[in-house]
Figure 1 (cartoon, rainbow, N blue to C red):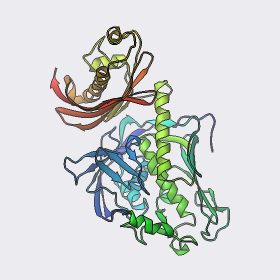
Figure 2: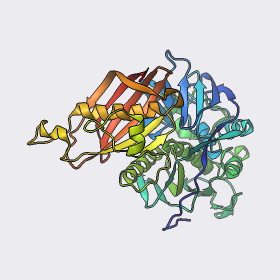
Figure 3: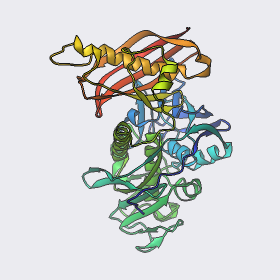
Figure 4: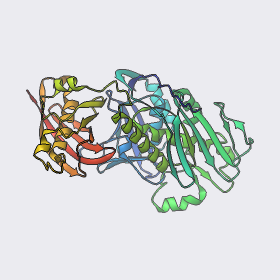
Length: 458
């Protein structure tokens, strides 16, 4: 399936739901009754969770930067707020091409429903979708991206214009009849005795038919340890397959290779945290959520590297002329050279090329030139201004810095460095903006902080 000379997938416009969709159920691990409402959102919002049960209703965005390691489940966390077991819902959104949604949730765990993504998919599909005028970012894997831990591994290879996944689940016990090379419903060959191998090509129809109904599973010998760790409180025979020494009971299986199909379901949900449409062929062997998360982070790192080298075309960036129309700053105090990514009104990425000709180097440690940390903060503030002032209702206003919090200066920036500035909105109101920002050099975090602005008439 791999292609050494990948052709970029055709761009499409971002989509959101036409109508809100509501789900209720018990969390597989917490055992708590949870209600979620998936609502439409404007382009660039991404998939964000709102914890309605907590004071100030914190927002947690589904993104690789917010993924945290948790046993047996996907977790995203922003500050003290977290949401976990979200992978089945995220996979359904990704399969349907729903890029933007606000999910109100009154607890920490997404309901497990029947342990699959089937009910999530049907509800979202029946809502319908609405297309925006903002392009969906696409990332084309150009060279192998590899992660490994022990006998488990995942490699992302150049694709064929779409996302395809091959999952190898090594399982030493008998899993039912069907022979070593039984064909599954999408034509891929799979083994059902000592190894399950499933191939999948991403499309909404394929996902609904071949992947969405696959349920979560647990090995019988793990049950006690999971319960002792406070997990699996909501698991039962209806939402979780229990795999004993002889495999799961055959009369409970939806396919002979349901376990491997569920692994693909989890992988799709985790990959959705890249925030892009993936063009890749992925081969996973014995992997789980931890390794999925490692792959997401490696893909994002590679995308950053390609962006900084100008290898990733951007339909939503801004050149210096565009920046000057939004900001009042001019030489020598303009601290961003180019905006390389704009994700609606939610996130922006810019670069500044730091040279020895910067005027501040003449007086700031001229024998050992280091960019002042306050100017890194200024670069963050200026990019935040670009992001906030792009909104139509903010035309003609100024973004005045109001407060700076949680600042950490972690490394030196010197002549020859390219400063990558990232800003993400925490909260935006008509007169106030609150953002989280960071600066990196060659993938190394050098500064970060949270900034608040008030928007005033110019």
